[in-house]
Image 1 (tube, rainbow, N blue to C red):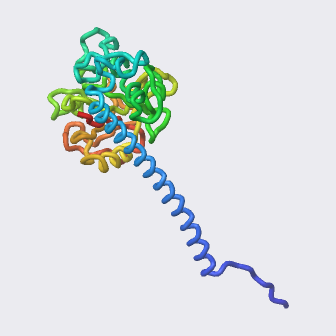
Image 2 (cartoon, one colour; image 1 turned 60 degrees about the vertical axis):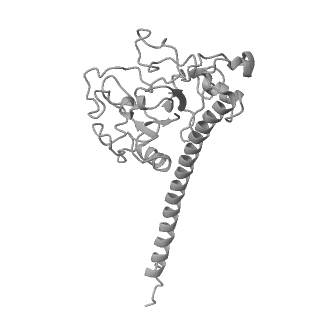
Image 3 (tube, one colour; image 1 turned 90 degrees about the vertical axis):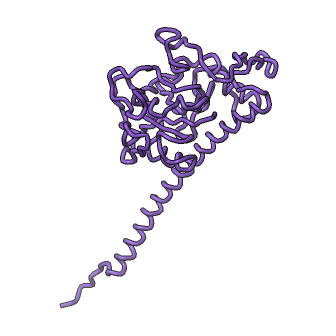
Length: 281
């Protein structure tokens, strides 16, 4: 009888193959993490660029972009004058009852807010050209982390259309303020840069932003840790769920505990649950 030659992998060869597969998988995961980290850094850079432009504009023109009472003296009829009170505001036109919304907490994107990015771009202090428009990347830029859906705006106070608790669970530390934007304590800031959602299916300003977030808790924690204190409800950089009158959040919670000011981020949630805000003044 003749011996048949048997072809098979040795243990050494199998080990080499497994090592190669491990290196490939590890390289893919590392590459993905590097890409995500680069996106987060780009988002932080965008926020810092806008904050710097905000301050530089004030130093150069002696007023705040969007709010300048003599903006047309600087930029001609390509823009409009504000009321010069030092606060970027909208009109109360978005409120169901005009005048009823606390500070600028209502739906409308108009008056001074719609001129903020327009005047920063006219002054050459931010990249891109913007004009008075409710549409993303025309009236205000999309975010670098989630392009095409994020939007940026400056406002005096919280940016939500609800002024009362409406029977919902409220932040225990915040004297009855509603669970959502108000948990951030936005009334502690004079001016705030908000990152909000512009839903692609409804291009009007901040459509659906009361239901959907823009960043994951992990992404937001990464930004917060680099910019500020790593906590959603304290410091210069803050985050929270969008506000929903029904108390339900489509993509879950951004923070772990909405009754504690020292709560951390809900990093077990991988969905876009967070809106963010950066203090300008």
